Image (tube, rainbow, N blue to C red; front, top):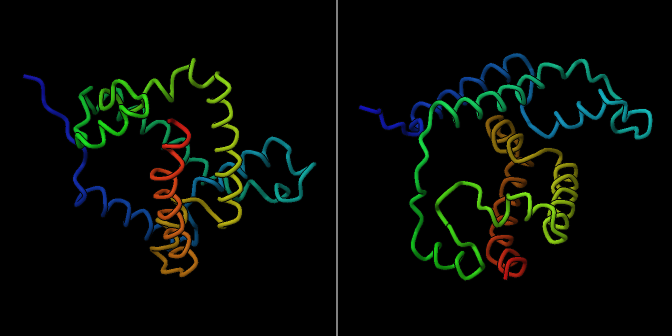
Length: 186
């Protein structure tokens, strides 16, 4: 009999995240994925062209293990700890996405209309990737960190700027999904 795999419950994953945060705070470290991009750019020599990337990237090598862990953990979770199943979505969500041209809503986590090579290599897909990438990069730099950095590290260390940033992330997400997403995909 095949065991049905379920996501870890909040009372397991939440304390694990908190434990990691206590360890990072104890050692004077901060967590955030966007800082890894800066480190990778510095390793690649971008500091020769742009002063922002001219810093001691070797002091941030520990943070690259976070990226490696996320990639390896995601691979293990997808291939060994989960089963393929339909996603139980609200019928109103399914109807709204169907009206926007999404045919197999809930059949996979990554809809083909957004994540197939045909979609990505189209003018519309490339435009979305380039503009979205620019906005995420600009927003991350302007906000002084990414969603994971502010929401996990910043809030756990009670930083008011992180609270403001997280509120901004949620408002931006709501604006995107309710106003801009229908414009882009209608």
